[in-house]
Image (cartoon, rainbow, N blue to C red; front, side, top):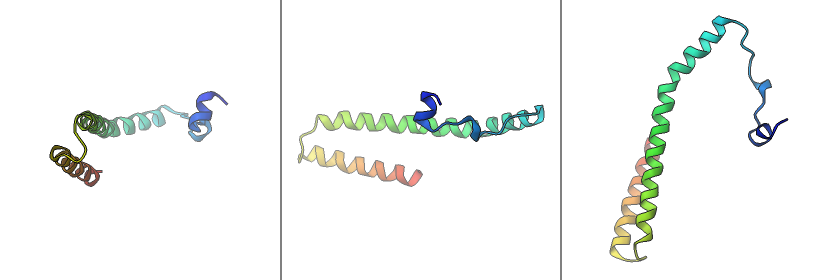
Length: 87
């Protein structure tokens, strides 16, 4: 087994061999049908990661216990809860 197989438990044996053009077309159609949803989720995750990166940068400039710190904490928790509802 290769390094990739060891790290991800990837095994070609888990996949069915494509033996016909019809089967290949079905896989392509399925992939294409699902790809937009995948891309939308990926985009949403990237935006969320960027928001949290920005939150982290803002946190670093606040003094613990200050009013600004409490306001940021409340806004952050509200955002986290909203994302949990979406997911």
